[in-house]
Length: 137
Image (cartoon, one colour):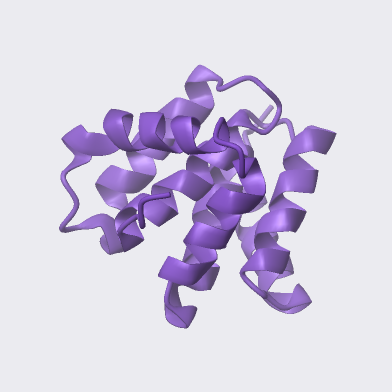
């Protein structure tokens, strides 16, 4: 498997979160684009590459090593200081359609274990994302 850049690894996690329930909703795809265009960690990334990177991730997921292989790649590439940011990006996408399915919860659990995130960090990220996605109705 080719080694992704840090930006690509972050996008891979968002794609994995989005595709975990076998559906990539418009809300989730839009959220991936919004994260890439607005989060400081992506300020030097060419947003025109999002589709290509997402397709690369899909190819890797269909490879013989599948999800576990992609998670291993991501964990190897991401520096420790960006692991909470990576999980936050994945959670942001999973929460975008205001419905967290069991498959998405399971994939987020796999991601946080692979990134070795503590319970308090994960809870804070989840609460922040939920607060951002609330509506008046």
